[in-house]
Length: 184
Image (cartoon, rainbow, N blue to C red; front, side, top):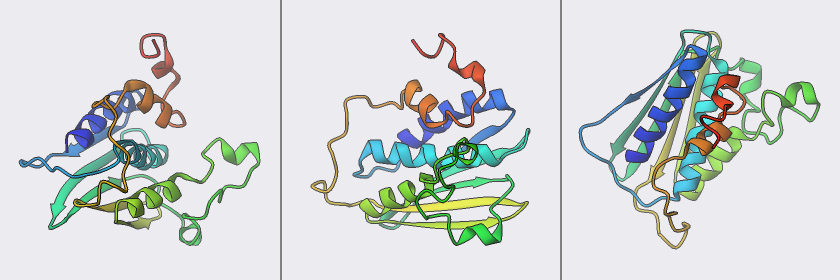
């Protein structure tokens, strides 16, 4: 739960420069689990980046973490533009944007594929709901008791680094976030 809270706070700090807010719905009890910290962090950054790209000024992203029995459930909800019905069938296809430079500027089309793979490696699943013009909700369930032999050892860096956040959100943050102040 500490990773999710810290990452939400850091992303919100930078996203406010775009006029949007990332809200974290905290729970009174901490949630502990065995996980590959790098994969979970990348998964969250991909989901937050997708949401931030879809938001108009004044938009909101809501991030929550809940314990559901033996599962940790991470939800990312936004009030962005949503996904067109004709695109829903291909959101997990690799490189669904193609390779022309015009479409690559909005991503390579790997984000949700990476998120789903990270969830699977943690014994979990991904559920996506989207309504065009209304927003998108992604729920990722992760097993809280996955065998540590499947996972890498956690690194010594216990907080999401600013460089990691800035790299993960490079396609949706304003240029002001990439000054010497944050890129030492």
